[in-house]
Every structure is written in C-alpha cells, then in structure tokens.
Length: 132
Image (cartoon, rainbow, N blue to C red; front, side, top):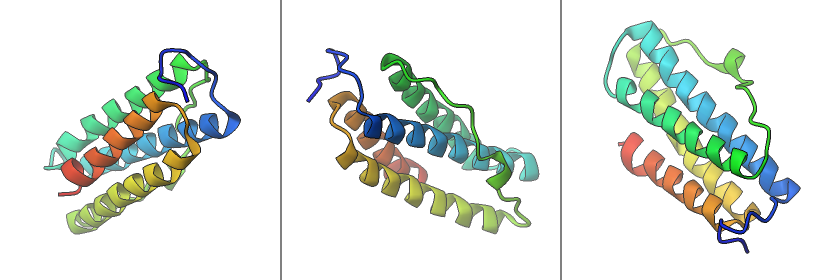
C-alpha cells in the first residue's frame, strides 16, 4: 500500500475510481450552481457550491499527482432544473447521500492511503456539513 509519498502508480481500477469521484464532485457543484442560477443567492446553496468546487480541486490535485489526465465535466446535460426551492433542497439531500455512498463504493477499490483519506474527508463533509 502506498503512503502517498512513494508515487506508486494507480491501478486502472483506482484511476477510474478517482476520475469517477471527480465527475461526481463536478456534478454536485453544477447542481448547486443551477439552484443559484434559478433562485439567486440562497442559503445553504451559496455556501455549499464553493465547498463542492474545493472538493473537486482536491480530487484534481490527486489525479495530477498520479499523472492522470483530468477530465472536463461530462454531465452538464443531466443537471435538473427546479420549479421550487423545496425541489432543489430535496435534490441536494439526494446528491449528498449519493456522494457519501460513492465514497463507500470507491474506498474498497483504492489502495493508496492518501486517496482513501481524501475520500473519507469528502464523505464526512457530505454527511456532516452539507447534508444537515
């Protein structure tokens, strides 16, 4: 297992998992930005959108560290539009639960401790900061 400093290459599975995590965080950021575009500068979306950008940036740094080509966001056409703020809130809840579940799914596929630490931190942010 890598301690993060030895720069052992990622396995194909680890690389795919990391790129999937990046897309997930891009999607969460786009979701919250869509809410702001529709309803204006509303809480908590105005705070969480910045956090999601930071989450994506951390994952991008991990990808760059291991020599992966960082993808552009590919899910823009999947971002829903909302008629009410209540719908947006429900979508946010579902997105944070999905984020946490994704990190639970990706962790067993990952041997690099530094990436596991990032996954755990992002999972905790979703469950303990964004979801409430």
